[in-house]
Length: 153
Image (cartoon, rainbow, N blue to C red):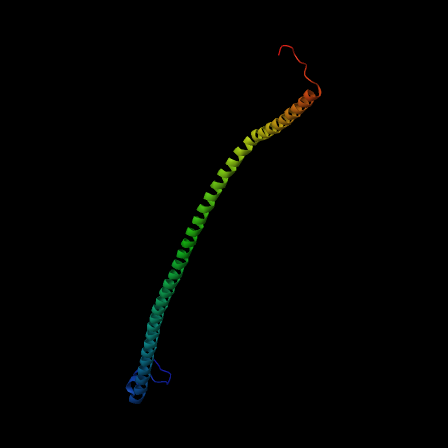
């Protein structure tokens, strides 16, 4: 084999000055690789730490959101309870009004009877007035015309 400087592989290995440069180059490469591996390893650790921090932050965010959602759920439950109680009150009021309407309908059914009673009162008053008028007429007639005397008395 021939190297770039025209010497063979043995020539490169035999030469002490050239050997030092080759060794230096190999050591340099090795240290480069080592530094690179260390850098990648530290990046990996940083990513792991970063991802651990990210997971912790995500967990804390999720906990915070859960607390907020639980609070909203409790508020919604309270509001639902209030609405249900209002619905119960309205339902009771509706039933009371329906009963009152039924009662008034029954009263309306009896109104014709009340109308008849009122009509009968008016007829009765008219008859009483006529009766009094007849009494007056009879009284006048009896004053104007003397009663025939009967001998039997």
